[in-house]
Length: 614
Image (cartoon, rainbow, N blue to C red; front, side, top):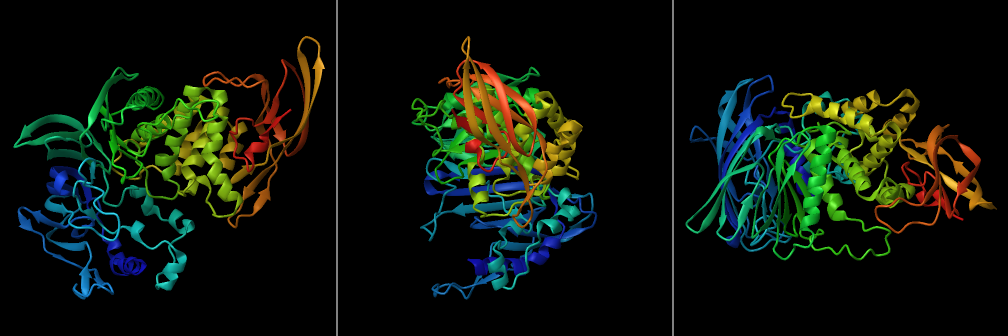
């Protein structure tokens, strides 16, 4: 496989320099045959030339399609197949070369700058027999999750070999590092979805088996039955949508609701689920309602008429998000039992959590679509984690967030402490742990500057970049600019630490002493230690001076209630420098524990020693 991947890059990489036409409209007729595991697609996509020079070629990827063809004005577009793979060692009955899925189409007449062209295509998917790997995960008897049968456009750098060792072994140059990518100005002019991606209108008619419901993005304009098959017509054109979109078909039950969001608009909410998986449908509806209300109030209008959540088959990704349609596969929490707390002080409702995280992407992916520069995915992936932390706080209470925040970063801390990966500062990071880290960092910023200020920053950011069709598109630097605008100078250190540097705290309670006083009062004397480091590019810790705001708390016996706060006897934000500090406080009520940054709002190497039981 690595050999083929290397050949893919060697042969097709030069075509990455060919400017791509942008998709502005897609119209489809899709016929699904779940019982036969087949699909037929006939469609048109409208492409525009925004490149500033004529375009006469189009590289197309037919991966996953058994056959496809392109036409302009009902005349087939001639093509060549630039990539041929050697025959497999044991495929004696196959030809000596195996044609790849890529075709290079040559236009008879170039598309000039500013002009558009409508391309007709037909494609088919037929799953026969079986392959060496998992197969036919997209079209199944009950639970189809299909990409519409649309071939991909252009060269895809994400399919290149990633391993430096394998690249060197196969004669490929090193992939550009973050420093090089940061200087690539073209990346702010390209959406993260790909070079051909743009805001587009969608018009789809889907037919499926007579016992199934089909859905996709957009408003359901009509449905009908003919010849024992069900037909559904969906349109989304005001506003348009960003990629990607999916077509689903299954024997669905449907839970429907209506949410009146703060601007007075009614949003139709729908949850599509298997008839046996009904246990937590209301949890999903509750999450969608809560999220639509808060996100609309904080960041501005939800732009679509519908918001749908659909259950998908077990072979699909756990979660997906697209414009007005999110999915959660059947391995999720559809029938999870939340009555058994499992020793938790409150039941961690991951149905609520995951639904709200993907819902937030209706603002941070499908209104503000990020560019392809390093760090840009803090917009599409980091902001939704922050939003769901805010929503969990509103559900469980501000002082019950400790376990949630710890859980958010435990794997990040574990692997970082073991030295298993080198990361980039948040502003340039698209790494594996970026979303969780960004969420906690933004949650901490909200605690410092206030909910109104951070909401104002995010709302203004959204208003500048929503539904853009002309570059530059939004990146992490743009988001950072608005956060700085609403952060006072006295707190600017926090932004620099969390965005421009990789920063860890080492906060710890060293010892405690309790002196009983009259009237059920107690004098608490305790010593804490605090320090801060920046991590350089080689993974070395560099101690830095600090004079930072950190919470100090004293707590009584814990209250076993999911919405009540911990029994807080004392909580104050203090400004502390590096070193040991002795603190003396008189509290009303018997203390049980003392903490420095007790709710783990700061990124701490060892968060468990922030609180000490007396």
